[in-house]
Each structure stands twice: as C-alpha cells, then as structure tokens.
Amino acid sequence: MELLSLKPYDYFEAIQTRYNLLRRYPFISAHTIGKSVMGREITAFFIGDAKEYSLFVGGIHGSAHFTAGFLYTFFGEVCDAFLKDGVIEGLKVKRAFDGRGLVVIPCLNPDGCEIASRGNSALYNLPHTTARLAKKDFSAFSLNARGVDINKIFSTLPQSEPESCSLKTFLEANSIRHIICFDKGDNKIILPSVKNMPKRSNRMAEIMLSGSSLGVSLRDDNIYEKGISEWFSEKYFKPAFTVLSEVNHNYADTYRALRELMMLCAIM
Image (cartoon, rainbow, N blue to C red):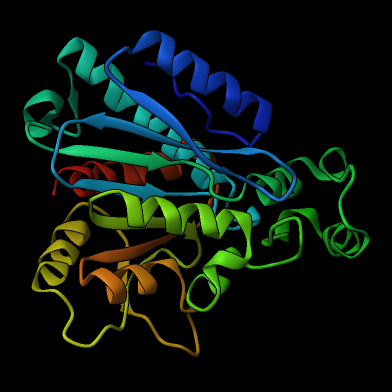
C-alpha cells in the first residue's frame, strides 16, 4: 500500500485520509473523541476485536506533527494487510491480531500540528499571544492554540484543555491494555517512573528494544516532563511508554525504522 501521509501534517488531508480508510476498509471504525481549541476533530481509529486495546497516540506536540503521519501510515498498512492477508515486519497480521485490537489517535493536537507544519496559513483567528509565539519559529511550536502544553497539563489539569480532556474521557470510557505515545525527541523509549511498575512493562521494554535501534530511559523530572504516559500508568497500573524520535533525513526512513516496534507494540 502507498504510504499515506509521510510528510508535513495537513488537517484537511487528514480528514480525507479518514474518509479513504473507512471507504477502503469496512472492518474498521473511526470516532471523533473531541475537538481542538479551534474546532478541529480529534479521531480515534479502531481495528480488531479484543477485551482490551493497545493505544497509540501521536501529534501531542505541534513540533512532532510527523508522528501523526507515521500513525496514519502504520494504521493504513495494518488495514491493507488485514484485507490481503499480508505481512508486516515478518508477521502475518491477521494471525498476529487474533484476539487483539488496536486504537490509533494519530493527532491529539491538530491545531498545534497545523501551526508547526503549515505556518501562516494556520494562524487565522488564533489568540494574539499564541500567534506571536508561533511566529518566532513555526517548526518549533509545540503547544495547542491557547498556548498550553497538552502533555504537561495532563498530569495536573487534563480537563482544562479540550484536547487533553478528550483523551482523558476516552481513556476512562475504553479498556486500554497499554498506551504508547509518539513524540519528538532524542530517539529513546521512556518508561514512566512509577513505583511498583507493572511487571509487563519491563518485558514490553525488552521486546520494544529488540525491534528498534532506540535506547531506553526511566523518566527523569529534570529531563522528561511528566505527562500522558505517567498519568495512565499511575491511574490504571498498566504499561505506558513514550517513544521519542527525530526526523534526520526524511520521514520515510524514520518511519521504517520504527515500524517493527509499532507492530510489536500493537500485538503485545
């Protein structure tokens, strides 16, 4: 299958991708779990049938908009493999997903991703202070349209922003086995520093490392902010990781380097 969106994020293209996925693959579902500050839809895609679902979340920070493209592409490849009884990274997808399910929220922060990737064209009707912040360096913009870091606010006041509130409500209403957040960073898998961490977390980390060239770190307050993964692991005592990656040369190469890890995380 052609790669769906391995390029800078575009909200209208994302809406078209949602339509195309639902048209091609009638065995999946897509739900709007909320809207951003500026009214852009936040979508969750479901595939498989399980008591508990693996959850992937991307596009948390605007500057990490490429992670939305990675998740749209991966979900599209999984769907195509389901349809054609195909293989991803040496695994027969239908067989691997037997009794398992995956939810993908490609872009939690569509406003921030649009600003970081599209620049001036995304600034219409933004609060003046936020627009001024964005104009300093579009590509580095990491906040939502109100100038709030969605990941950082999640551990204290997730209900205060529409994007974080949407994810919190979704997590409380669905049975999630583990969560993997994809973000921009120094090519590492970050484990939440939760006391008495679930045993499955260590085993998952070992498998994730075997399927990627990333390193691993325990979250340090002085280096990595407390956020979605930490909140989820503390509240539900289930595995939660943040996968940090950087696009060095092109999106396609970075995506392919992560694809085995994504496949393993989807079925663990």
